[in-house]
Image (tube, rainbow, N blue to C red):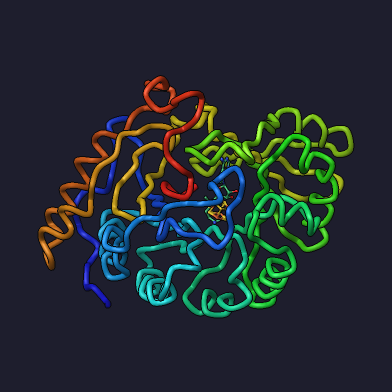
Length: 343
Ligand code: SAM
Ligand code: SF4
């Protein structure tokens, strides 16, 4: 499955607003072993297999992006670790870490498969992972994920830390659901030396009405609540994404806030997203995308057409996701699922 693509000596990916694109998020599957109520409906129809990029195609796509200057790869989904054979892909990416072209290979996972895969991920060169976890209560966990079970995820987190992975917890902030766990989650993360980031819930796709959550908890409220107990110091750290960080002076802990719908980070945006079908989304908040699977499949063994398609797509990267907001939101909902674009 190894594809020999030498990093090109050609220009790196710079968009029309002079932003260097060096971060690629890749959804490797739209499938998942959970059905989180804010992400999926209970009865999801998943894509036919033929539409998905094969593991070889994923390798070729990522390697081409790396050749064009991408230095950070985040693998996501759906649940990336339920994709059959996914470790073959991780193993294949190791060569780019070894060559120095890739600085970081990481993933966002629900943690359910970590018990099985943590050592293999470390062997492939993964050093840090994000685990999504909204509650520490067994019953609430089963309710919010529908199909997930907390003890399995806890064993996964244990295994990850034991294998030497640095774990960051991502929790979606949900009013009336995990509001009362703000300090429990914070303390638990501190006790395990894990960073914690809260994500503001986004209205996404058609996730069924039966469990429709109307639990938007603005992170500015959550932050104010944290400040009642801790001294918060803003950190200058920027990731080029929608996350902002503070340090809790009393514990030294770093807490992040991700507000996907605010657009005050667009000027430093360094990322694009590839779906599991090979569509490249230049902006999380916009519908504009480029089909990279077609040029990839049309010219097997020749990445020139793919490279040109990537460059053409980057030339279309919009300035920000407030650009034409009216086009992407239908009835106040994003028209595509996070599991499709890869959150
Ligand atoms: N399955 C993996 C997981 O849960 O970490 C990776 C994919 S998941 C789509 C990535 C992230 O998106 C998770 O942290 C999840 O909580 C978040 N997410 C999903 N739907 C969301 C929504 N409607 N609003 C905000 N975050 C959402
Ligand atoms: Fe699956 Fe992650 Fe979506 Fe939950 S948030 S349903 S774990 S893809």
